[in-house]
Length: 444
Ligand SMILES: Nc1ncnc2c1ncn2[C@@H]1O[C@H](COP(=O)(O)OP(=O)(O)O)[C@@H](O)[C@H]1O
Ligand SMILES: [Mg+2]
Image 1 (cartoon, protein in one colour):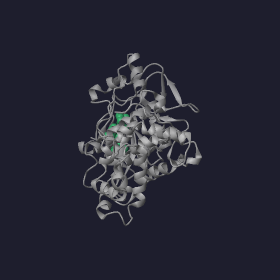
Image 2 (spheres, helix red, strand yellow):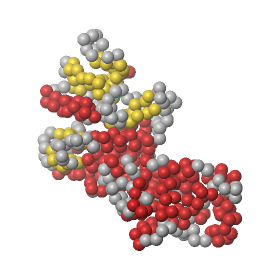
Image 3 (cartoon, helix red, strand yellow):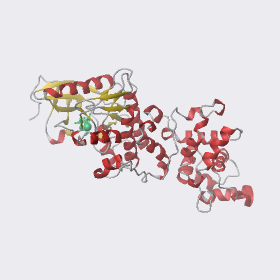
Image 4 (tube, helix red, strand yellow):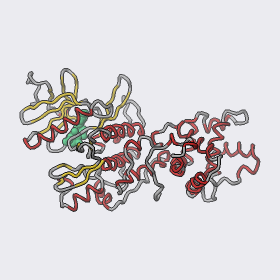
C-alpha cells in the first residue's frame, strides 16, 4: 500500500509499520515520508467534508506561526483520495517519549529539563502573543515534539498539533465559543473546561463543546503547568494517576511532592500555573521571566543584591524582611537553626574566623543570605582551606548547587518576599521581576 507508486504526488510515504511515527485522534496517522526529496513527517488526516474547515484552520495557523523556532514547521499539503496529508518538519521524539527514557539515549544530545520547559513556554508565548491571539487548547506531552539536530548536537522543542487551536477575534483576550469545537484531552484540561463539560453533560472524551464557554490563554497555562511538573518529575502528574486526574482537577486536589531537591523551590510557580483561579495563573511572558529560567549565576547575583539592598533602611524593606522571616522554618532544623546544614568544612572555617560566636544567631533567613553573599566574596581568599574550596566550589554556578541542595527554598522564598520592592527603582531589584504578582499561598 502507501503511495510511493504515485509519482505525481508531492508528498509520499509508505504505510509500513516501521515508518509510523504516531497516531492521533479520529484515524489520524503520522508517517515518516518525503516531500521534495526532504525527509518529513506526513500527517494523514481522514477527510470528511465536515472536517475541511478545521483542517484548513490547522494549516492556516501553521502557516502563520511556523517561523518561530519552537513551533513545528509546515511545508505543504495535498489531498490524496479520502485523506488530506500535511508535510511537517520531522521530529524524532514526543516529549512523552523523551520523558519515558529520561532524556537518556546514547546518541541523543543532552539538554536540561529546564531548557525543554523554556522552549515549550517560548512556543506557547509566541502563539499567545499573536494578533489575533492563538490558544492551543491541547497542550500535553504528546503534542510537544523534540527535533534532534545531530549536526549541531542540539534538541529544539516544537509545539505541534494545531487541530483544535482557536484564533481569538482581533482585540479580544478571551472568547466565548459555541458549537462543535473540540475541547482538549483528558487529564490535561483546566478545571473550568471540565466543569463546563460536566455541566453541559458532554463527556470529556467526546471533547465536543456544545454550548457557550469562555476560553482564555490561561487554559493553556494550566496544561503547561501540568507539563512542567510531568517533566521535572520524569512522568508524574500533579493531579495523580490517569484514572483519577479529571476528578482531582475538579476538586482542586493536587500534590507536588515528587520534585527533586533542586526543583522544590519551583512549587509556587507550578501551583500558580495550575491554580483553579484563572487570574492566578501567570501569563507565559511572565513565566519566561521567572527564576526557574535564570542561570545559576543569576540566582547568586540576586541573593547578593538582596543582601546589599537590605543594608539600607525603610519601612517597605522591613515589611519584606518580616514576610521572609515568617518562612524561617523552611530553612531551620529542629533546633531552630540552619547551622548544622552547612558542611563540616564551612562550620570549621566560620568557627575559626569568628570563634564560638560563629554558631550563634544562625536562625534568620537574612543572615543565611548574608553568608551566601559573603562566602562568594571570600571563597578565593587565603584563609579559606582547599578542602572548603573543594566542597563549595569557587564559581557562582558551583556555589549555587551547594546552597540550593541545602536550602532549596532560598531563592524562591526570598524572591516572593521582596516582590513588593520591584516597582521602587532605588532598590535596583526591578530587573529580577515581571509584572505578575506571585503569592506565597499554602505550601506543602
Ligand atoms: N512532525 C512530527 N514529527 C514526528 N512525529 C509526529 C509529528 N507530528 C505528529 N507526530 C506524532 O503523531 C502523533 C499524532 O499527531 P498529532 O498532530 O498530535 O495528531 P492529532 O491531532 O490527531 O492528535 C503525535 O503525538 C506524535 O507522536
Ligand atoms: Mg495530538
